[in-house]
Image (cartoon, rainbow, N blue to C red; front, side, top):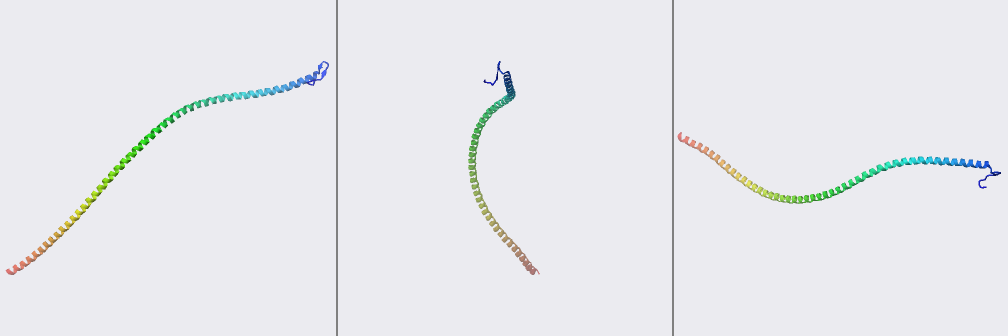
Length: 182
């Protein structure tokens, strides 16, 4: 006998069969209860998963809108960077032109400065010649003044001595005239 029932007159022993059925029923109840608990846990997990899925769908939607926003910003930045690149090239070209113009102006300024220095040197030489001529003329003038002063001193001395001689001659004449008239 496969299940271990005892035999009786009418077949198997009813108590054994009932006991077997009760054991099976209890084990099946326990298995059903465990499976129901598992089903309930899985339903809770499924509800949590669905709730998380809903949240994640919202987050995904937010992330998708942010992605779209950043894609549009990326395009704006890309356009802006291309424009900045063009502006950089234009600025670089302008800077080179300005530098070339400044170099040309510098060269012209240096040439003008050299011309001015030459004019200044020539003017300085001419002024030195004028100075020498003025100094010679001044020396000649001073010499002439000294000669004139010496000549005037001689005339003064001669005039003074003539005056003194005149006074002496006058005194002498008066003495002689007094001697004669007396």
